[in-house]
Length: 317
Length: 261
Image (tube, rainbow over all chains, first blue to last red; front, side, top):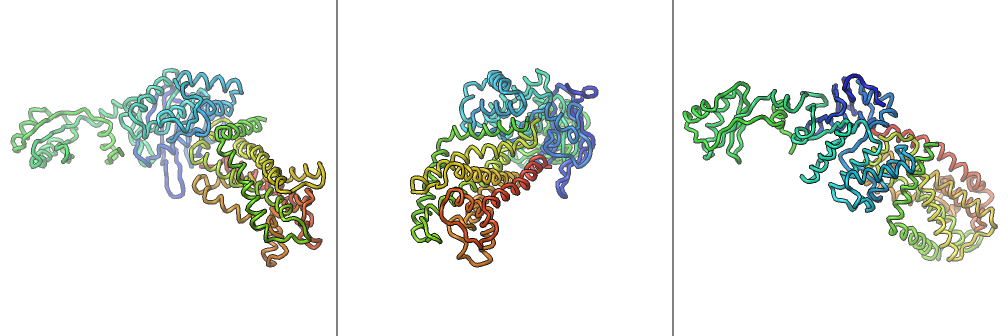
């Protein structure tokens, strides 16, 4: 049973967390609709992991309030723990045990009983196609498989809310896709997923709603499309001759009414457009400035642009 | 009840781990043999037992206690490793009892401890050590050793929760050796400088060693004017163990519930 108001299953209000003199969360407000994937997007040190630690009852907030499935994480931690799953940045399974032994252990600790724990372990291994590796020590697993067994271990309680802290950091593209598929399956079964990520494409691909976090608070939120719409399009120009790059940048800066970014390797100049600009006008202006253009185009914004515009910072690669 | 169940689950975890690592069991077998040779025959060749008697008979209770005291590093290392790998966070996010992790850790250690004690007893027997006082005192000595080990593993659990880091724990672990040496385990304290003698006499290890010597009927029974813990070793050892439990059980449980806050 969950008790929550409206559709929001995870709610934080003015959440603050201070470690010594450093404030990791400085008034975080979130509202995560039930049954969706919610992306907490931000650079390293933005407070994403702290937010997850507070929501999963590992750390108590300094002030503010957070509820999961209607229960307060500080005062009703026991109730919260019955309804959540957590997979952190590093696979938290016992490498000296097999995959199956790990799942059974977590099942017993999650109060499924001996029989229930065995059945649940078998069920999850079958469902996520890990039976072939179930009886090997997890220290022999590949990085991707470890993440998966870790993710599966977090599902042992059939949680209403699953917290994934950077679930695919450091994984190869194939393993990443597998994790993504698993996460989508979970949501199809009714689980709410809150994931943190530094990967914009991950948030874009998975999340129905995104909150961009920087300096311990939300600086923008909405659907991926809404966020992109706030930024407008980008005007990109690629020149053939490096000598023309500066000229191109000057023209773009005038057109976009802001400083154009240049990339010497790509020989490209780029500027966000706040108002509509006709492509022929761009070409004419560039021509008048004597810039020989190899390619010119209007580009829909990516979340990278969103991030850069909102924080003035590049997202860590 | 549920706490005990969770504790048992975590105990099983350690036993399952051991099953996958036959190498570790081999290590548990070889270590006592090395200690007996090193102390019994190398150092022992030049040490005289006050009041006469075979040095290896004198030494073995010291090695039994040393084995028990190793629970400190065992528990500290495994708790710290769980912290480093995030397993502890997963436990703490589960709806399990707050006391279960330290209980499981220390409970599991009792099984491992009984195994290494049995091996050490066998090693001693091979080298000519014997329990001379019959069944009940012998059982009593084993009880004293197991209780001491259990209380020491709570110290280790607490330090593991405190340092939270596998590497730090690795560096701290060897420090348990000098603590063992500052006792009557290997040599009588009578010949030490007075200030050092006080420290060694009041080391819980000394009381436990003396208790074992007295229960097993081994040489090295302290003089009548010895410090109180050595004059009343069985009582002193039991009191030490209970005191350690009274301090470190609540500390560990509190530390586990609050870690990361």
